[in-house]
Length: 93
Image 1 (cartoon, rainbow, N blue to C red):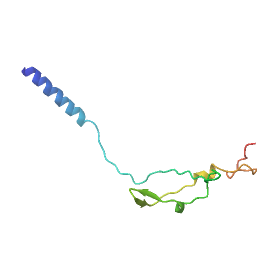
Image 2 (cartoon, rainbow, N blue to C red):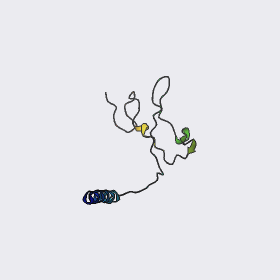
Image 3 (tube, rainbow, N blue to C red):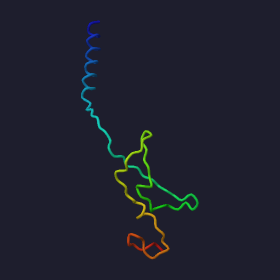
Image 4 (cartoon, rainbow, N blue to C red):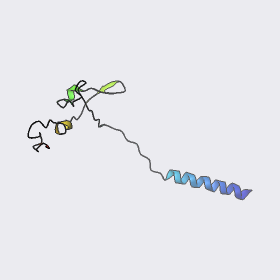
């Protein structure tokens, strides 16, 4: 009976030791990346000439500052009715 109690105690101590070996850390987030895709309701064409002032970001019902704004779509969406894309490459035929 005593041996079984010691065995259980040894198993509990081993489990506690292994749990203590797991590294833990805490962190905070200061910047969150958010993508927005904006399309015209009627034509469904992408709207690409937007600026940070055209958006308001809310977190827990409080407006948050937009710290960084990039218009990646300007280089993605373009009309190939012209001979050259904004990036300088030729449009596909």
